[in-house]
Amino acid sequence: MKTGIIGLPMSGKTSLFTILTGAHQEVRMGSTAVRAGVARVPDPRVEALAEVFEPEKITHATIEYLDVPAVSKETLRDPAYVASLRLVDAFAHVLRLFEDETVPHESGPLDPVRDAEHLDLELILSDLMVIEKRLERLEKDRKKIKNPDLDREHEVLEKCKAVLEANRPLRELELAGEDEKRVRGFQFLSQKPMLYVLNLGEQDAPRLHAVEQQYVPLLGSRPNTSVTAVCGKIEAELAELSPQDAAEYMASYGLQEPGLDRLIAASYRLLGLMSFLTAGETEVRAWTIPVNTTALKAAGTIHSDFEKKFIRAEAVNWKDLVDHGGYAGAREKGLLRLEGKDYTVKDGDVIVIRHG
Image (cartoon, rainbow, N blue to C red):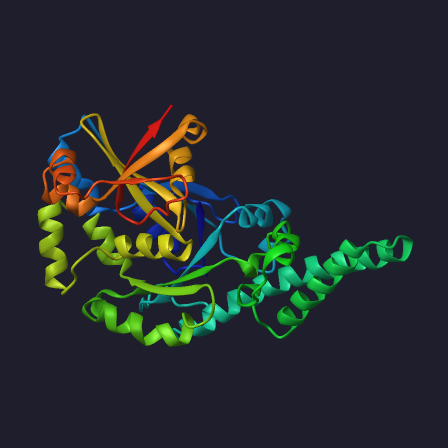
């Protein structure tokens, strides 16, 4: 799963990408190239299980982020740039809420709602152009042949067009079944889920949660959107500190966890993802799967042979496993369950796959 980090110039998006992924920042004046990086998904359950099993290897789940140059009318005319945007599963739009007299905001006073609407409008216009071209082609094809599928595609695209012409992104349009499949191939930009990331100044860091809640009804109340807040300057400092010093530094601002941990968790939720775990003396590992994944599909995430030769799964909640010192203790208390291929894996399940 990929999340594209987007935003206006001087919003701090590239700095956040660099801190998230550890990818070195490059000077890219005028470039529309996209940079990719991987962030580790913070998960205290992995560390807790590692204390019990003392494995040779510890592996966290990861999420891929793309650092996308500023979206504009000009960049959206570049086919390669647009193609890179279509590849992502969701966007994280970094919205500037920090004052810096040396770097004025290009639109004047700070207004994250204005900036969010401005960028959404660019995505809407890009999608509208795609739909209008396709409708022109459909009109010609429908005159040549009678095909119910073409008629239905035309009807669905007209519905999409009406939403866009009302200046609403397609992520607000609910499509199901065959209609959803018909538009999936277009990979419309305004249809992708949107995480709004408020980038606060250092002086507002103690109010981070309050500011986040202030903007939830303004930005995150629509379908397939979410809001989180970070302070880029503090995150940059935290990246250079030891865990103990970082904890003390956060405490001085009244923060309990790094903002980027919350950003990653918010990305996970927005994409409809969760983690199950495997644990043993060889490795403790978190695996990323969509919510409502069956045990059979989860087995395939570990190895394709596990899915093909699946017999059953043994499942136990991670905390039960930790509290009882491992599988023997959990089994003795009747907490280790035998589940079939249709079992819906829960977030935090520790799974042992039995296969032929």
